[in-house]
Length: 316
Image (tube, rainbow, N blue to C red; front, side):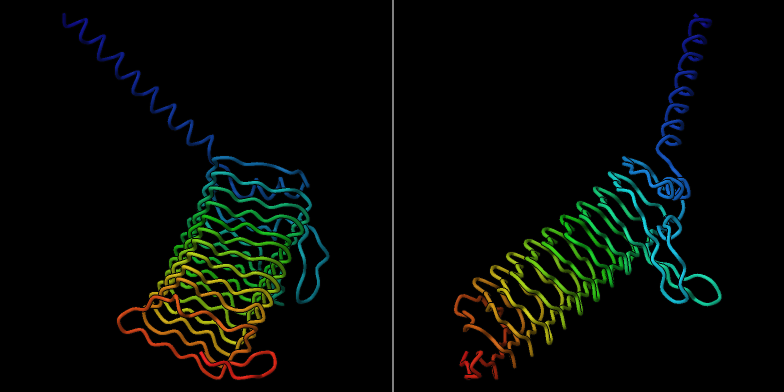
Protein backbone atom coordinates (compact mmCIF):
# COMPACT_ATOMS: atom_id res chain seq x y z
CA UNK A 1 0.00 0.00 0.00
CA UNK A 2 2.88 2.35 0.86
CA UNK A 3 4.47 1.69 -2.54
CA UNK A 4 1.19 2.55 -4.33
CA UNK A 5 0.81 5.81 -2.38
CA UNK A 6 4.42 6.72 -3.08
CA UNK A 7 3.90 6.08 -6.79
CA UNK A 8 0.72 8.18 -6.87
CA UNK A 9 2.54 11.01 -5.07
CA UNK A 10 5.42 10.88 -7.54
CA UNK A 11 3.07 10.99 -10.53
CA UNK A 12 1.19 13.95 -9.02
CA UNK A 13 4.45 15.83 -8.40
CA UNK A 14 5.63 15.19 -11.92
CA UNK A 15 2.28 16.40 -13.28
CA UNK A 16 2.52 19.64 -11.27
CA UNK A 17 6.06 20.17 -12.48
CA UNK A 18 5.03 19.63 -16.09
CA UNK A 19 2.09 22.02 -15.69
CA UNK A 20 4.44 24.61 -14.25
CA UNK A 21 6.77 24.08 -17.17
CA UNK A 22 3.89 24.52 -19.61
CA UNK A 23 2.84 27.79 -17.97
CA UNK A 24 6.41 29.08 -17.98
CA UNK A 25 6.83 28.11 -21.61
CA UNK A 26 3.53 29.85 -22.45
CA UNK A 27 4.63 33.05 -20.72
CA UNK A 28 7.93 33.01 -22.58
CA UNK A 29 6.24 32.49 -25.96
CA UNK A 30 3.82 35.40 -25.36
CA UNK A 31 6.64 37.86 -24.61
CA UNK A 32 8.58 39.82 -27.20
CA UNK A 33 11.22 42.50 -26.83
CA UNK A 34 10.49 45.97 -28.16
CA UNK A 35 13.86 45.90 -29.91
CA UNK A 36 12.69 42.93 -32.01
CA UNK A 37 9.67 44.94 -33.17
CA UNK A 38 11.95 47.82 -34.12
CA UNK A 39 14.06 45.44 -36.23
CA UNK A 40 10.96 44.13 -38.00
CA UNK A 41 9.74 47.65 -38.82
CA UNK A 42 13.14 48.60 -40.20
CA UNK A 43 12.82 45.75 -42.72
CA UNK A 44 9.59 47.39 -44.04
CA UNK A 45 7.63 44.18 -43.42
CA UNK A 46 3.98 44.60 -42.41
CA UNK A 47 3.04 42.55 -39.37
CA UNK A 48 0.31 41.64 -36.91
CA UNK A 49 1.13 40.86 -33.29
CA UNK A 50 -1.59 39.24 -31.18
CA UNK A 51 -1.70 38.65 -27.42
CA UNK A 52 1.93 39.56 -26.83
CA UNK A 53 3.61 41.18 -23.83
CA UNK A 54 5.96 43.83 -25.17
CA UNK A 55 9.08 44.07 -23.02
CA UNK A 56 10.97 47.37 -22.81
CA UNK A 57 10.20 50.81 -24.23
CA UNK A 58 8.93 50.82 -27.81
CA UNK A 59 10.38 53.83 -29.66
CA UNK A 60 9.02 54.10 -33.20
CA UNK A 61 11.51 56.86 -34.05
CA UNK A 62 14.28 54.27 -33.78
CA UNK A 63 12.53 52.14 -36.41
CA UNK A 64 12.05 54.78 -39.09
CA UNK A 65 14.21 55.90 -41.96
CA UNK A 66 14.84 59.50 -42.90
CA UNK A 67 17.40 62.20 -43.41
CA UNK A 68 18.45 63.98 -40.24
CA UNK A 69 17.88 67.72 -40.01
CA UNK A 70 19.17 70.07 -37.35
CA UNK A 71 15.91 70.67 -35.50
CA UNK A 72 13.01 68.49 -36.65
CA UNK A 73 13.39 65.22 -38.54
CA UNK A 74 10.81 62.71 -39.83
CA UNK A 75 11.36 58.99 -39.32
CA UNK A 76 9.42 57.20 -42.08
CA UNK A 77 7.77 53.84 -41.40
CA UNK A 78 6.70 52.07 -44.58
CA UNK A 79 4.82 49.03 -43.30
CA UNK A 80 1.34 48.43 -41.89
CA UNK A 81 1.38 47.84 -38.14
CA UNK A 82 -1.27 45.86 -36.21
CA UNK A 83 -1.29 45.10 -32.48
CA UNK A 84 -4.22 43.06 -31.13
CA UNK A 85 -4.63 42.19 -27.45
CA UNK A 86 -1.06 43.21 -26.64
CA UNK A 87 0.26 44.54 -23.33
CA UNK A 88 2.95 47.21 -23.51
CA UNK A 89 4.80 46.97 -20.23
CA UNK A 90 6.83 50.16 -20.69
CA UNK A 91 6.50 53.50 -22.50
CA UNK A 92 5.45 53.70 -26.16
CA UNK A 93 6.54 56.77 -28.13
CA UNK A 94 6.55 58.20 -31.64
CA UNK A 95 8.57 61.30 -30.68
CA UNK A 96 12.10 61.61 -29.35
CA UNK A 97 14.69 64.28 -28.62
CA UNK A 98 18.26 63.10 -29.09
CA UNK A 99 21.83 64.37 -29.15
CA UNK A 100 23.55 67.39 -27.71
CA UNK A 101 21.77 69.61 -30.25
CA UNK A 102 18.37 68.43 -28.94
CA UNK A 103 17.23 67.16 -32.31
CA UNK A 104 13.52 66.26 -32.42
CA UNK A 105 12.46 63.18 -34.36
CA UNK A 106 8.81 62.36 -35.12
CA UNK A 107 7.36 59.24 -36.72
CA UNK A 108 5.63 59.28 -40.10
CA UNK A 109 3.52 56.17 -40.73
CA UNK A 110 2.90 55.68 -44.45
CA UNK A 111 0.26 52.97 -43.92
CA UNK A 112 -2.49 52.03 -41.46
CA UNK A 113 -1.75 51.76 -37.75
CA UNK A 114 -3.93 49.59 -35.51
CA UNK A 115 -4.03 49.10 -31.75
CA UNK A 116 -7.02 46.97 -30.71
CA UNK A 117 -7.78 45.62 -27.23
CA UNK A 118 -4.32 46.70 -26.11
CA UNK A 119 -3.12 47.81 -22.66
CA UNK A 120 -0.49 50.51 -22.17
CA UNK A 121 0.89 50.07 -18.67
CA UNK A 122 2.85 53.33 -18.64
CA UNK A 123 2.97 56.43 -20.85
CA UNK A 124 1.79 56.64 -24.44
CA UNK A 125 3.38 59.47 -26.41
CA UNK A 126 2.17 59.85 -30.00
CA UNK A 127 3.16 63.51 -30.13
CA UNK A 128 3.66 64.89 -33.65
CA UNK A 129 2.99 61.51 -35.28
CA UNK A 130 1.76 61.57 -38.89
CA UNK A 131 -0.42 58.69 -40.02
CA UNK A 132 -1.14 58.59 -43.76
CA UNK A 133 -3.87 56.02 -43.45
CA UNK A 134 -6.43 54.78 -40.95
CA UNK A 135 -5.62 55.03 -37.24
CA UNK A 136 -7.52 52.50 -35.14
CA UNK A 137 -7.30 52.74 -31.36
CA UNK A 138 -10.36 50.78 -30.22
CA UNK A 139 -11.04 49.09 -26.87
CA UNK A 140 -7.62 50.09 -25.56
CA UNK A 141 -6.65 50.93 -21.98
CA UNK A 142 -3.99 53.55 -21.26
CA UNK A 143 -2.93 53.57 -17.61
CA UNK A 144 -0.32 56.34 -17.82
CA UNK A 145 -0.49 59.76 -19.42
CA UNK A 146 -1.49 59.85 -23.10
CA UNK A 147 -0.17 62.56 -25.41
CA UNK A 148 -1.49 62.87 -28.98
CA UNK A 149 -0.57 66.56 -29.29
CA UNK A 150 0.37 67.66 -32.79
CA UNK A 151 -0.72 64.34 -34.30
CA UNK A 152 -1.95 64.40 -37.89
CA UNK A 153 -4.10 61.52 -39.13
CA UNK A 154 -6.38 60.85 -42.10
CA UNK A 155 -9.27 59.10 -40.38
CA UNK A 156 -9.35 57.83 -36.83
CA UNK A 157 -11.38 55.52 -34.62
CA UNK A 158 -10.61 56.00 -30.93
CA UNK A 159 -13.69 54.29 -29.55
CA UNK A 160 -14.55 52.32 -26.41
CA UNK A 161 -11.09 53.03 -25.00
CA UNK A 162 -10.20 54.12 -21.46
CA UNK A 163 -7.65 56.74 -20.43
CA UNK A 164 -6.88 56.54 -16.71
CA UNK A 165 -4.59 59.59 -16.66
CA UNK A 166 -4.69 62.92 -18.51
CA UNK A 167 -5.11 62.81 -22.30
CA UNK A 168 -3.75 65.60 -24.51
CA UNK A 169 -4.79 66.26 -28.12
CA UNK A 170 -3.47 69.84 -28.34
CA UNK A 171 -3.10 71.03 -31.96
CA UNK A 172 -3.90 67.56 -33.33
CA UNK A 173 -5.37 67.37 -36.85
CA UNK A 174 -8.01 64.86 -37.92
CA UNK A 175 -8.45 65.10 -41.69
CA UNK A 176 -11.41 62.75 -42.15
CA UNK A 177 -14.22 61.29 -40.03
CA UNK A 178 -13.25 60.72 -36.42
CA UNK A 179 -14.95 58.95 -33.55
CA UNK A 180 -14.36 58.91 -29.81
CA UNK A 181 -17.65 57.09 -29.17
CA UNK A 182 -17.96 55.31 -25.80
CA UNK A 183 -14.45 56.34 -24.81
CA UNK A 184 -13.78 57.15 -21.15
CA UNK A 185 -11.46 59.98 -20.13
CA UNK A 186 -11.07 59.48 -16.39
CA UNK A 187 -8.99 62.63 -15.86
CA UNK A 188 -8.47 65.78 -17.96
CA UNK A 189 -9.11 65.71 -21.71
CA UNK A 190 -7.47 68.66 -23.48
CA UNK A 191 -8.40 69.38 -27.11
CA UNK A 192 -7.12 72.96 -27.37
CA UNK A 193 -6.44 74.11 -30.97
CA UNK A 194 -7.48 70.70 -32.31
CA UNK A 195 -8.64 70.70 -35.96
CA UNK A 196 -11.47 68.40 -37.12
CA UNK A 197 -11.96 68.50 -40.90
CA UNK A 198 -14.97 66.20 -40.99
CA UNK A 199 -17.70 64.76 -38.77
CA UNK A 200 -16.54 63.99 -35.24
CA UNK A 201 -18.51 62.01 -32.66
CA UNK A 202 -18.14 61.74 -28.89
CA UNK A 203 -21.45 59.93 -28.47
CA UNK A 204 -21.78 58.08 -25.13
CA UNK A 205 -18.30 59.29 -24.10
CA UNK A 206 -17.43 59.75 -20.43
CA UNK A 207 -15.36 62.77 -19.43
CA UNK A 208 -14.32 62.48 -15.81
CA UNK A 209 -12.10 65.53 -15.33
CA UNK A 210 -11.64 68.94 -16.90
CA UNK A 211 -12.55 69.02 -20.62
CA UNK A 212 -11.21 71.83 -22.82
CA UNK A 213 -12.02 72.52 -26.50
CA UNK A 214 -10.78 76.11 -26.51
CA UNK A 215 -9.66 77.39 -29.93
CA UNK A 216 -10.74 74.13 -31.56
CA UNK A 217 -12.03 74.11 -35.14
CA UNK A 218 -14.67 71.72 -36.48
CA UNK A 219 -15.88 71.92 -40.08
CA UNK A 220 -18.83 69.51 -39.79
CA UNK A 221 -21.19 67.97 -37.25
CA UNK A 222 -19.67 67.74 -33.77
CA UNK A 223 -21.77 65.22 -31.87
CA UNK A 224 -21.67 64.65 -28.09
CA UNK A 225 -25.10 62.99 -27.83
CA UNK A 226 -25.56 61.20 -24.50
CA UNK A 227 -22.06 62.05 -23.26
CA UNK A 228 -21.37 62.54 -19.54
CA UNK A 229 -19.14 65.32 -18.20
CA UNK A 230 -17.96 64.98 -14.61
CA UNK A 231 -15.72 68.06 -14.47
CA UNK A 232 -15.76 71.57 -15.91
CA UNK A 233 -16.18 71.86 -19.67
CA UNK A 234 -14.74 74.85 -21.52
CA UNK A 235 -15.16 75.98 -25.13
CA UNK A 236 -13.53 79.37 -25.59
CA UNK A 237 -12.98 81.00 -29.00
CA UNK A 238 -13.78 77.75 -30.81
CA UNK A 239 -15.34 77.52 -34.27
CA UNK A 240 -18.04 74.98 -35.15
CA UNK A 241 -19.10 75.16 -38.80
CA UNK A 242 -21.53 72.27 -38.37
CA UNK A 243 -23.95 71.76 -35.54
CA UNK A 244 -22.61 71.47 -32.00
CA UNK A 245 -24.87 68.66 -30.80
CA UNK A 246 -25.08 68.12 -27.04
CA UNK A 247 -28.48 66.49 -26.83
CA UNK A 248 -29.09 64.28 -23.79
CA UNK A 249 -25.71 65.21 -22.30
CA UNK A 250 -25.22 65.39 -18.54
CA UNK A 251 -22.97 68.13 -17.14
CA UNK A 252 -22.18 67.60 -13.46
CA UNK A 253 -20.10 70.79 -13.37
CA UNK A 254 -20.00 74.07 -15.29
CA UNK A 255 -20.41 74.22 -19.07
CA UNK A 256 -18.87 77.35 -20.58
CA UNK A 257 -19.33 78.18 -24.29
CA UNK A 258 -17.99 81.70 -24.80
CA UNK A 259 -16.67 83.79 -27.68
CA UNK A 260 -17.31 80.94 -30.11
CA UNK A 261 -18.57 80.87 -33.70
CA UNK A 262 -21.51 78.44 -33.67
CA UNK A 263 -22.39 78.56 -37.33
CA UNK A 264 -24.36 75.32 -37.32
CA UNK A 265 -26.23 76.14 -34.14
CA UNK A 266 -26.26 74.47 -30.73
CA UNK A 267 -28.49 71.54 -29.82
CA UNK A 268 -28.87 71.14 -26.04
CA UNK A 269 -32.18 69.26 -26.21
CA UNK A 270 -32.84 67.21 -23.09
CA UNK A 271 -29.40 68.01 -21.64
CA UNK A 272 -28.96 68.23 -17.88
CA UNK A 273 -27.00 71.11 -16.34
CA UNK A 274 -26.19 70.60 -12.66
CA UNK A 275 -24.38 73.88 -11.97
CA UNK A 276 -23.85 76.66 -14.51
CA UNK A 277 -24.35 77.08 -18.24
CA UNK A 278 -22.48 80.06 -19.64
CA UNK A 279 -23.48 80.70 -23.25
CA UNK A 280 -22.17 84.20 -23.82
CA UNK A 281 -20.50 86.44 -26.39
CA UNK A 282 -20.97 83.95 -29.22
CA UNK A 283 -21.92 84.31 -32.87
CA UNK A 284 -24.78 81.84 -33.31
CA UNK A 285 -26.59 80.86 -36.51
CA UNK A 286 -29.92 80.02 -34.91
CA UNK A 287 -31.40 80.50 -31.48
CA UNK A 288 -30.48 77.57 -29.20
CA UNK A 289 -33.36 75.64 -27.71
CA UNK A 290 -32.87 75.71 -23.95
CA UNK A 291 -36.48 74.96 -23.04
CA UNK A 292 -35.95 71.23 -22.70
CA UNK A 293 -32.87 71.50 -20.51
CA UNK A 294 -33.24 69.98 -17.06
CA UNK A 295 -31.54 71.90 -14.26
CA UNK A 296 -29.93 71.00 -10.98
CA UNK A 297 -31.14 72.64 -7.77
CA UNK A 298 -28.47 75.35 -7.91
CA UNK A 299 -28.27 75.64 -11.70
CA UNK A 300 -27.56 79.08 -13.11
CA UNK A 301 -27.76 80.01 -16.80
CA UNK A 302 -25.95 82.99 -18.26
CA UNK A 303 -26.93 83.56 -21.88
CA UNK A 304 -26.11 87.06 -23.00
CA UNK A 305 -24.40 89.15 -25.67
CA UNK A 306 -24.90 86.47 -28.29
CA UNK A 307 -25.38 87.72 -31.85
CA UNK A 308 -26.65 86.26 -35.09
CA UNK A 309 -24.81 86.45 -38.42
CA UNK A 310 -26.49 89.82 -38.91
CA UNK A 311 -25.24 90.93 -35.47
CA UNK A 312 -28.76 91.07 -34.12
CA UNK A 313 -29.06 90.49 -30.40
CA UNK A 314 -30.49 87.09 -29.54
CA UNK A 315 -32.57 87.12 -26.41
CA UNK A 316 -32.22 83.77 -24.72
